[in-house]
Length: 197
Length: 197
DNA sequence: CAGTTTACTGTACAACTGTACAGACATCCA
DNA sequence: TGGATGTCTGTACAGTTGTACAGTAAACTG
Image: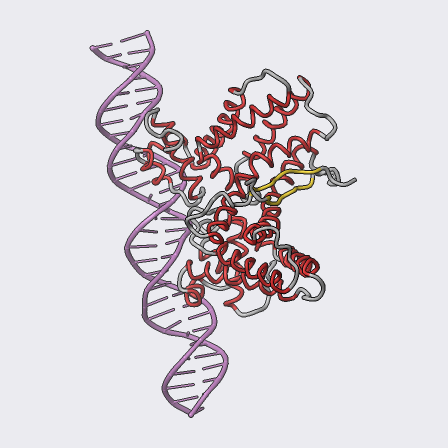
């Protein structure tokens, strides 16, 4: 549902269905037939458009990178570097909220260093590095930390929270009861620090 | 190899092989035959000992909880509560270092809220809650935070780091080059804070 | 020693996997 | 109009999946 599985071309519907299912059940846990059924087509058409399952995964990852790109592009570029960065973070956060499947997919892909055939972390690191670079040259993004630390910091803050939150939620529900008060729930703190030299 | 696949009974070898493979390739990505081969037996024996794949997974998760239990039990209980807690953390950390497959398995299982059939997070939360409770009654574990926050804090610090580290490593390698200086790599900071009231 | 339980192999089976391909239908350009 | 191109269905196939089971070898029990 999330990525708008309703109208669009069959090709896009297939890709969106694949994203949803990969997010929930993983790549090996999702069959071509299940994707086809979710998209309202037959297996044959999936193969016709994407050749192989690998091809379909590549298309899904490309789509995710595009979503990040679009989210960043939509954020206003006016104001100080701090405001620009904040606006970009907010825009990305909004996109991830609208498309929970992206979070699910990334969670699986990124934490799966070993064995994941895709390159999405690589591409997202790239994207973030470019983003930080433009902020540094254009404005006053603080340069008292090495830029690689800044890039990793953005990645970890934006994504790490999303990955660990389910763990916190689950533990909180177990400890505080199912109808959770919710406002007593501890808040996750995630970031990076420069190593002590 | 990690969990000592060498000697032991065939039944234990099967369980250990399953843990290793589940950690690397996930449950759906691992076939009964692959587990049998890794343990040096035939599929028939796997079924004989564990009936179904679900049964095998249950045994694997039970084993993991046991490893945590043993690690905690091995830590000395002398000294102040702070020392006891530190010793337990260290003992668990040592166990996880000796058995990287446990980390891999937990990474997959815990962050997989949806769709994971096992109950391992539930059991580990339980274990941690009991651990915190005994520290509180026995000694002086600070009671100025709610105990659920303390429990979640322990979980997040012990496990969160392990889950996010691969992401940091991968990004660092990409940004700083393959033969990484390593000592410039930013350090992960993970914890929980009480919500602002 | 015989008898029983347990460990283990090998094979069999139905269900499902990814992929290939022949053909039906639609769309578009000459 | 007619051919070409692209969309889409249905079926087919070889390989893999989890599980069942008959039978052999070994270990234990009396």
